[in-house]
Amino acid sequence: MTGVGGPLAERAPAEGLAHRRHVRNVHDFHPFHGTNLFERIGGQPSVDRVVDAFYHALEQDTELRSLFPADLAATRHMHGLFFAEWLDGPPRYS
Image: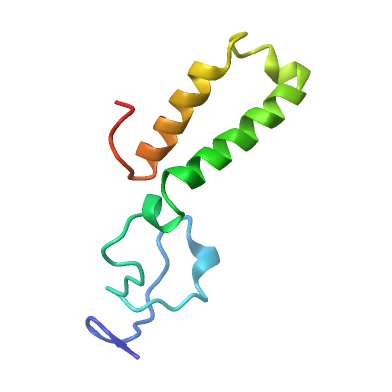
């Protein structure tokens, strides 16, 4: 395989990425070109499932539950918007 700049070059991994020294990557190879992570994971329905799973677990955990407001509906909704935007989804949180 040939990438930009010739065959797969032997380059020293960036600091903190030494564990990836065996991973060969062709530069400019983007298998999901034209999409973002939000779209690749299934959009808002997938984010909502993760948030729902978190809040379900939260409701069962007496120690963590005390750190959240009595009514979780508003925070659940806002977390869904936050994580969607964080994953490069629509900017509906900020």
